[in-house]
Length: 400
Ligand code: GLN
Image (cartoon, rainbow, N blue to C red; front, side, top):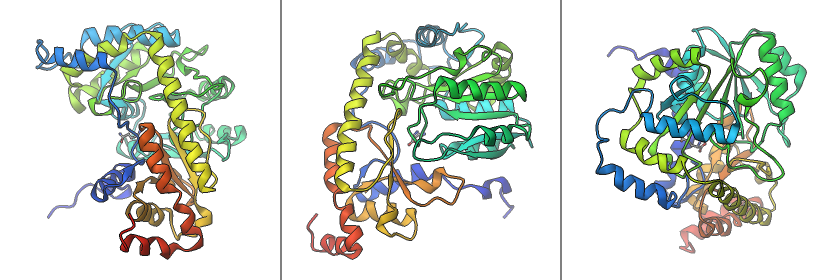
């Protein structure tokens, strides 16, 4: 049999999505892959029903159905203040996942370097490899996950073509401040690099933190490529709707990449999602309150385990430090949590460049009842510390 491409040998399938499959097999509560277990807003469901009866069953315009792009442009400008021409500044993609791939292939030639903060959302490393780019990793150091400016400047001195910034950050929950973004932009300008932003959690930010749109900062327009998605804002991760927003010259090239990768995002779903983009300000305030409550409920549950964890400023992930439980690896821990406790998380090592084994990432985009049920089960983490075998035994005795 012929050999498959060697570039595929240097990364694995997504660990996040692998944990979902494991959770499903064992009937565990899935706090691994970040998606809600509650419905999108009623307005979207009504619009989706209506869209099924409309003329939306064939290809939409490749770079996005006009009505969707217009509503999207208005919504982006409403929140970020950035002027967006739907004809020139947007490509609609299949989720932020495709948006990031499009951004990378638009910005980078094979062999170009790209700065990635570590820990990072696992797609970025694979995207870099698939687009032929070489990642340069710059650590974000716990507990605040700040970067060291001289270290970042040294990375920029290696002449990267781009830097990828996830803000609010998955998996750390860090929200980059205006000052940090200005520093990043200044370095990018000095070394003529693109700033590729990934902002699907723009509306999930906890007071007093605030989301700053990099594209809105002075001098950012020409070099910022923003990748985003409707998945988290409207609880529609399965609709796979995302977009790239950038300068017209960049978008003209990005359209070509998108065109030959996927042709386009699903037409009826673009039509229906307009209802989400037109929701009033109160929807977003409600979303922030909803997630603030979920965060508080889940962090309370975690406090009772006695294990240290990160307190997110935004997004909906928490990194729990399990180093005191004495597992060989975080992968082993995550697998045992699924099988023996019934809660799935993601081994933290899949987000780090460094050999870091101490974290499990859990997300809290779940109904409060689900979070409390998970919290009950997670209390049993304490048993691992004293007697790891006890859990297995109680399981065999049918206690759960
Ligand atoms: N962003 C989600 C997570 O980190 C998953 C996204 C995906 O699987 N495409 O869990």
